[in-house]
Amino acid sequence: MLTVFLDGLKADSLEYMPFVNSFAHKARVKTQLGYSVTCHGNMYTGVYPDKHNLWFIWKRCPETSPFRKIALIKYIPFLNTLPGKLALHKFVTLFIKNTSWFGVPRIIHLPIKYWPNLDVSEKKSWPEEGYIEKYPTIFDILRQNNIGFEIVGMDKSEREESRIVEKHKLSVINPWTYLFMGDVDHFSHVYGQDSDEAIKRLKDIDSLIKRKYNEYTKYVSDFDFILFSDHGQILVEQKIDIYEIFRRNKVNLNKYFHIVDVNYLRIWVDDIREQKLLENILTDNLKGFVLTPRLLEKYHLPVNPEEYGNIVFYLDAPYVFSKTIWGYSRKMNSMHGYLPEHKESDGVFVSNRPIKKKYVNLVDILPSHLDLFNIRIPDYVDGESVWM
Image 1 (spheres, rainbow, N blue to C red):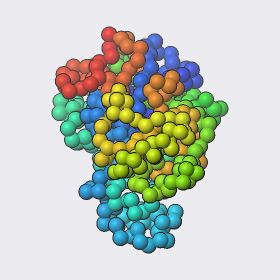
Image 2: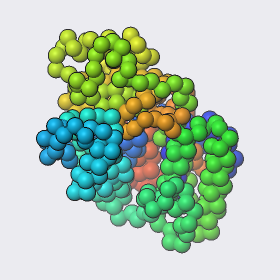
Image 3: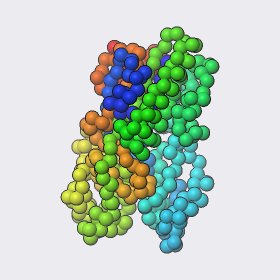
Image 4: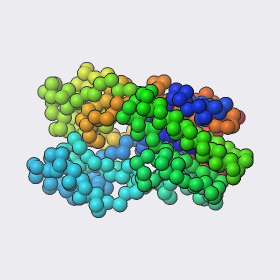
């Protein structure tokens, strides 16, 4: 089996990729509400976030926070500057063992006094044994069944994973070869996926996939081919300073422990009256809504206010926040993490085998692979095999 993963390829962009688009069997991928960390949890375990509990990279967990020993540093004012925060983060992370894809990202706009509340949700890389404790990944299951596999591109030796794939020679063929490329997501954020620059790069990646496919056929004449992505991309039209929104409403957001993700704001607040005040400011001034228990259930999301916030505000397309925990959103000209109902949020699923579904869910990825290896799909899996 040869599988290709293209992070962030939206379904409609297949028109720029003639080789991939030439396969007769295609479906759209219904993404997960959230970012890459939760999409990959779905893909590799076959269960939704309300089971695997990966929704955002940052969560509240003071007991395991890598910053829990710096509580007194909040009293040193000069550290609450950008250079001070970067220096402190670099020092602390020297002593942290985290092998996940995102590691322990830099923290920009969150005051240092809140850092000891923070922990990252991922501790290990996706292929590592026990990535998610309760739910084995496809990599775990293949190892348990003594099925060999090779992963190409899932490392950071190059700026773009396609360069790793390009250099790799398929000289030894395992039962499963997995080509992982995040390029599309990277350049789509900067240029937008329908830009001239992005279209050129999509065509280049399409040519690379064609070369690798043909290289594979030299060793294996009959094989299953799967190409899929986890989400699409939507152009950003405006960047919003959420801190200024609160200032205009005479509220200092930094009074509360909060995390500004690119199009989510999460706040931890104890007082029910304050909670209502903050929610009203958000819903009165922004295009979006607070995720209620009903919506969390609808999208299979964790109901865990202690970890992810008792106010989770979703900012809808085509907007993002300008000042986030990640930085200033200067190059964020296209984004994902929006509602799965947006057509441009759709990813893509392509194969040389007939597909029985018009829409493939991310939780279908694991069972579809296991089915082709004749491995029994675990009962706890939320997805299903997509093959006819």
